[in-house]
Image: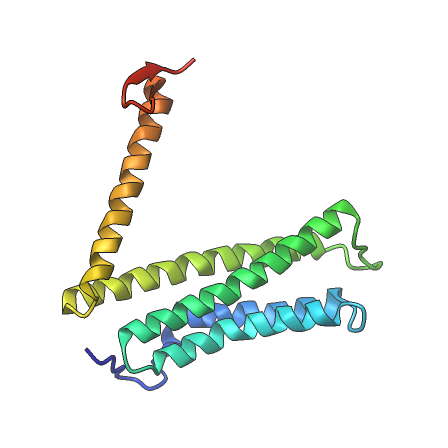
Length: 186
């Protein structure tokens, strides 16, 4: 089925798109204040490009012909978001370990990084839910390929099985050995 949004700029109403804009602008502000334009130029450019890419991929995916393509571009957005998260986590570690120094008057860096990481984690979660919602739409429209439906069911079943055995192990102290026999965990 062809994906046809009613509003050509409807992506602007999406909370994910708006929050990505905030993440992008706050990332640019952060890199301008806390990173050295010469010494950190590669990191600075990477962080700004990753932040920009998150929002641009939502826009491009929204204009694609099919829901499946839209989902793919949301995946690209999440990938860029993951890169940005990695950069902030690395900076957080470097500042904490004293590998990277903060210039006088810039004491708010840890708080700023924590706030940005909070936004990024929340955004990742929202995008994940958006993707799941679009996949459900494809299932209901019968446009999701059958092999993907089967794979999703198998993954869900595998996760449920793993959770069950973890609960048995944690709750009752029982484990299954390689022969399938239950033994009491020591």
